[in-house]
Image (tube, rainbow over all chains, first blue to last red; front, side):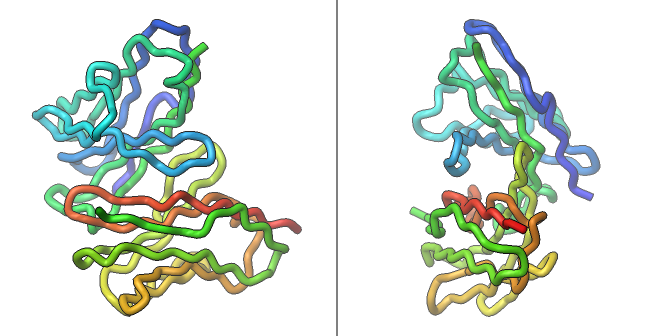
Length: 119
Length: 110
């Protein structure tokens, strides 16, 4: 149980275009999802916390107009990278709490990640 | 704030060698502790976890013991295999988010 599916697994886009990444909980309802960015040889950087039915909470330094997050249902959160530039190229990973109402002391279930390359 | 410190890699071992990857955490509150593994090109998978002091998490031959007195959660395996080659992340839970260490790349050579 507690599977998170992330789509697409990789994408190449032209500079200036927008890219949408989907994160779905397949067999559970995820009221809270998290979006991370991972740079080469570096750890995970939390970008934002996505709550179903409300605005996402962004971490300091993350541009909310650049990285649009929508969590419109209990099983789907999307991250849209708007007007992408080469410096946005990275590995983006989503995660969810496997049980609604659990604190993060329970741990996450992660998606498989999306490799974004902006050319 | 909450933080996790783990040894930097890469760690290169021969097959069947003993593995230790050190991890320490800040002692604020009573966090759960985790080890995640990331295989090349993939997301993270939970390897093991411990929720309170003296708990031992174990999975696939890997073990880690929650040591409150030393604020440590070192990952160990008695005999590594080539298939264990991956990046390992130590992490601690908290009320609002999980905090990750920098990740340690393990390379096991035949």
